[in-house]
Image (cartoon, rainbow over all chains, first blue to last red; front, side, top):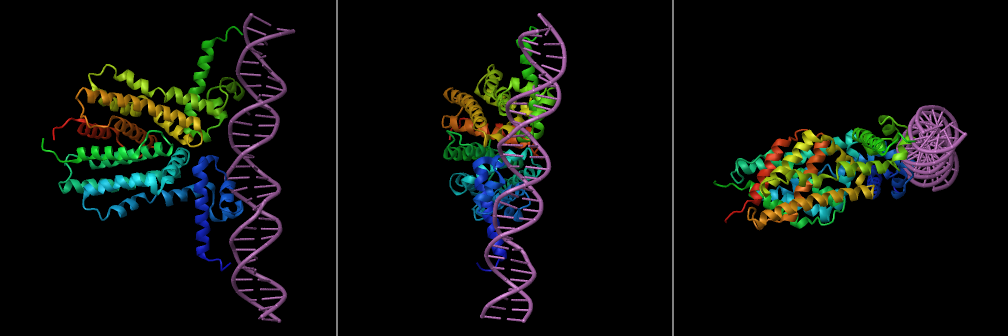
Length: 204
Length: 204
DNA sequence: TAAAAAAGAGTGAACGCTCACTTTTGTAGG
DNA sequence: CCTACAAAAGTGAGCGTTCACTCTTTTTTA
């Protein structure tokens, strides 16, 4: 065993977070015990408390690392898009892909977070921050499209952005809850069709 | 005991449910104690258990009575509408009105229910049932509109219905969580604009 | 270099508390 | 006195958190 370095601590931290995520996704936050997390991460309960001050601090960190990065993720993955149309389309694609393939657990984590939101103000604030981040990004995209004339001028960028965010999380929740008959591909197509018909400039 | 009639029992039951709802809305399900509910309903804990078998049974009943009636409510309130366009429009209006004025607590109750959904299968099933009910209704409305030629034939009734339901619940959750800058009236307008542009038959 | 000491990560039984639920006791009709 | 019910006290399991202690690794010293 080499020297106990800072990296080692980081790895342990990550191991705990991973373990906690698995446990939370399986039983939800309230039913998950600190012991569960400790066992799964191969540590003792006491050791765990050397890395995190409380059970809720673990959930909070998990949210920041797994959910909080959504806005910057969207920005990064759509930075090389050709224009606002492609940006919007990419966002929807990213959303569907993330839910189905890349990070299917994220949806369940969001469900866990929502479950705690009512009782824990800090958790709620975390969700609000994420909401604001994504909405700000989407709004910016739409506004650019309006200014460039590619989107119709009457479109309400701010409201559309909020709507898409609410829609995304609504779908995510039902998807995470294993709703039967909720197929993502048709949903993607229909959402894009609606957005397209709403945002396309039309001479009436 | 002659004086204790069946109606009296019913009233007690309702009193407990009302008390439970208030408590759940205030602290969430997990943090709410049976004692809280008992005190608020003016009964003792023991008395409470004469009416409900468990704490979760209270939540479940509450869900059935407060959330489960959504589909039939929609049907009833839109039965005298002139046509599918008005039906859709009415649904959106009802949704916004219910959230803002009529039953603002329903949104928070939905939040509570979602919070328990991950951990309690029966609660989850209840939410799924509600989802199916509303989706079935909306789908029917859209399909009628398509058949009568008022909606464009290419529209996907089933997916659109699911989308609207997810959107509604997404908005409800964020609204119930007191998201700042979430204004319902612009949302209503934009949703209707999107639906209108998507469903309107267009000769291309 | 080897032994001793220091450092500090890791352990897990125990504590204190909460809370859903049960049992016992009290009381008001008939 | 009996019955139907409610009030209150009780019960015990579960869980987050702590802390005295162990054990491993690193540093110091002779």
